[in-house]
Every structure is written in C-alpha cells, then in structure tokens.
Amino acid sequence: MLLSVIVPMYNEEEIAAKTYTTLVDVLKDLEYELLFINDGSTDKTREILENLIPEDSPHKVLSFSRNFGHQAAFSAGLNHAQGDAVVIIDGDLQDPPELILEMLSKWREGYHVVYAQRRKRQGESWFKLITARWFYRILNSLTSIKIPVDTGDFRLMDRAVVDNINRLPERSRFLRGLVCWVGFKHTGIQYDRAKREAGTTKYPLRKMMGLAIDGITSFSTAPLKFSLVLGMWATAISFALGVWSFAQKLLHPTTTTDGWASIIIAVVFLGGVQLITIGILGEYIGRIYEEIKQRPLYILDKSSRGKKYDMDS
Image 1: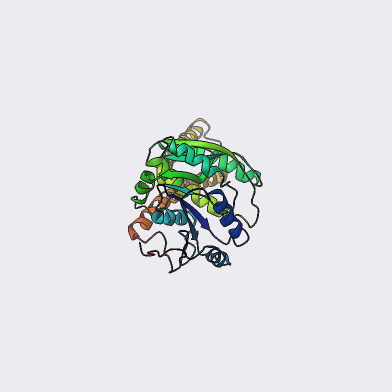
Image 2: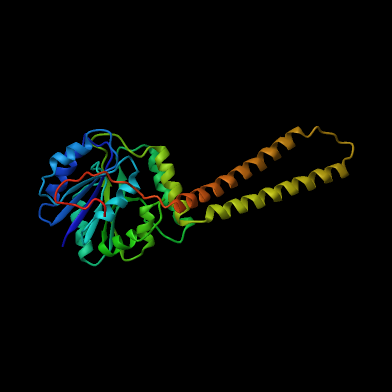
C-alpha cells in the first residue's frame, strides 16, 4: 500500500524544514511519497525543500510558475499522487501529522474519506472563529450537498475518490465541497488545532471571502433565487408606498409635503436592490467566463526532486 501526502507551501521558509522532518518521522514505518507543492513562493521555501529531499527519494517538489492559490496546489497534488490513499495537509503544522496514522486506520476499516474535524482552534481571532463556524452552516442550508462543519482541507481520500475528483473539469474549485459531492463513505476524526509555530497566515480576509464565494456559487443557485425574491419584495413595497401616498392624497387633500425624504429612500432602496442583483448575476456570469476559457488550473516549471518524474503529465 502506497500513501501519498500532499503538502502545499507558499512562503513557508521558516517552517518548511520542520514540516518535512516531522512528516518523515511520523510516516517512517509506511511506504509513502511526499508531494510538496511550491505555490510560487518568493522566499527560500523551494531551495530548502529541494536540499532536504535526497536524489533517489520518491518525494518530490512541484513548483508553480507563479502563485496560483491553495486550491490549485491541492489539485496539482491530486493530479500527480500515485498512492492508494492520499492525504492533503497544510504545511504550517497547525494540523497534526500524527493524525494521519489514525486516518489510515479508519481507511482500512472501509471508509473512503476520513476528514479531520476541529474541536478547538488556537491562535485565531474571534472574527475568524465566528465566520468559520457559520460559513458551513449557511452553506449547508443553501445546498443539497452537506459538508461537515468545522473541517478544513486536512483529510485522507481513497484512490477512487481522487480519480473521480481528477475527472472534474471545473476551474473555480472548492475541494471540500467536491469531495462531498463525489460521495462514497465518509467519517470524521476530531482534534484540537494548534496555533502556527512560525510564519503568518496565507488566508487573510480577502482570500477567505473569495473561498466562501467559490463554495456557495459552486454548489448553490440560491443567491440567484434570493435576488429574484428581493426584487419581488422591493416591487411590492414600492407598490404599497404608492397606494399609501395616493390614499393620503384622497383622504387629506389639503396635506402638503415636499416628499424629498420618501423619494430619496425609495431611490436608494431600489438602487441597492438592483446593484445586489446585478452583483449576484455578475458572479455567476464571471464563473461561466472563467470556465469557457479552459485555461489550466496551474502551470509547473521544470522543477522536481527525487526519482525521475514526468512533469508534463
């Protein structure tokens, strides 16, 4: 049995060496390969990893030509992994590599996907904790695909799951959702997530918002229906206000008012509804635009380490 472990890296020079040695120590009794995906790092991450991995090792460093993002890095790893079981794990050691052994035990019991579910998250702001907690609950309420709450990308997948994900052609990927979409038998393992030992988070608010939008628009058309309902409510409210104004004029013909406040409120309200609706439509049209271009998810430069490896596969 061959185990593949995919580790994306982006500017992780402070912890890259420790991540490598920790994984090697945890997995020393297994037949395995490590796939480090260097996501266009601008520091010494690539050099550190290439110097650590022996020439005759099955482990590899796959370097992107530029930064293509976290989801693209995981996709590249899944494309190149050879294992019967595949683990994806971040390279910052917040997710404990020791949990991989427990995941393998569950996999041998017959589970096709074993995901790590967080009980606690140390070293993270209250804002990130609240938004992460509610994101999956909102997403699950909008879609028919149920994604386990409080989970990240850290998980083990059977070969059958990986092969089916690799067949999916879409570009704007939300892998946590795709893993659930393909089905098979899932189970979870709970753990406490540690704080970062070194470096800084590579998921600021902007990227978190982008990932959330990808997740919702990839698996739900509810925002489109929401814009329709919002437009109907706006029309109903405007009609009601019109009827009320007409009735006031009939019942109290001597009442005068300049009407500036009501006009401004109505214009701002209707304008906001229109902008929200256009924005939602634009998000979906933008996804269609990205898909029809059929550009690759990532581009590898000619960098590898370990045994001879076909970089064009």
